[in-house]
Length: 566
Figure 1 (cartoon, helix red, strand yellow):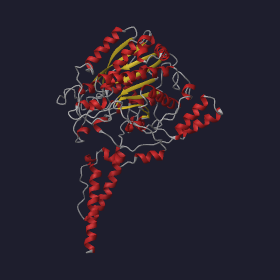
Figure 2 (cartoon, helix red, strand yellow):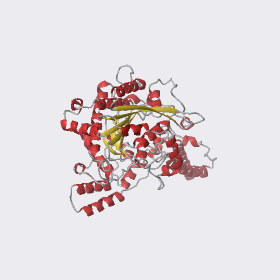
Figure 3 (cartoon, rainbow, N blue to C red):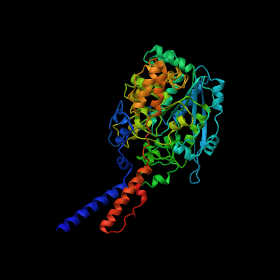
Figure 4 (tube, helix red, strand yellow):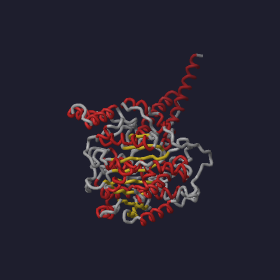
């Protein structure tokens, strides 16, 4: 009897081990992610608790039941891309003294012997009239060869690992003239509210005057004066829709594949169905333009979602990212804002790690973000490092490269809407306000914020932009520390020390050393990649399989296809 009980226990253990093995090998990304204790690792690294998007509610939220709402392209709320683009051309034509528009074309890397191309509009606005320097810079935007030359001279492996060998792109244009700010809209096809804000924002700029801005900015005459002064001394470059081909898929029905150019085999091999057209995030060959940049390119996060964030066959393989590279290379903005939706937040690099950059320019922007958040968004916005605030890390993102490669001191991502109550495949209401009143509410709030953001940049409140590097201004020093994501005690110490220096508190030399030590001692946390976690699970699975084989005397079960674990 004892031998029978022992044999039953042995078989039970073996069955449990077998089930565990199968679960590991067939686990989707979310189950693999669950095997990594993120909270514990954050605690070990000293990351402070914050209010991130997982804990935030949108200003408006509602869960719709299937069939989910869809945009009515004829009701005047959301516009087809073609109609919106035509109106923008008309707007520029009516304001030709202060505005210019160019259409830029690019061909991406051929895949499977197929060429793939797209185009974007670049709108330039300079209040009071376009200067010869501005026109020269825009006319000097080079072709795809500037991207190809950079790729030839900069090894992919160095940028994917962010090794010590990476070399920033030298800046050529002066930074002591007019402020240059770039806004990018529509990087993801399904984020309709982003391109709507692009058109709304350009209209506000074209009509900017005391009379038009007073009602928009709640009658604040002092702020209106500051904004107009800033606009008089700023050149704004705007891309109304970066991902045109992805947007065209969103505008078609699911059974219509005329705008689907190519689906990578890696995505087909997942065995998961293609998302509905309204959920099209990537371009029309299903490559995410916001994962196609060189910084950490090719790494995949442990919770990798292939259909949403496939990085492409090579960095800068896509015409969308190549066009943005060419624009940034020629314009050399001092600040960039990339407008997205899906959450409610303002984020900064890095996206590839949950710990914020600990530098004076990043810390100043954190305080300014909190100020703008409280003033225009009722304090409901998450702020901080992109790799923490959004709830996941991302590799190969636009803004990470803009900061590291182009040395742009202010690169922010604004997530201007997110319906946290929406179902996963209800992409229209998940990512976009429903109805004209709600849409206008968001466009107005974020445009107000954008105008004051430009004003704060013009005032020199971000170190290194119209102000000395590495130090706070008195205005920033008087702002409170924010409850931002991705911070450690060293970030708080650095902010406090920089504030003391700006306000003349304590011994300046001692405070400078204190800040320097706080920045140097900031923790580093490298999150496990998809491959690392999968390899770890395979090791566990092999150990379990070996134990089962030894105990049960059965044939080896390693014949489970590897692709099921991907």
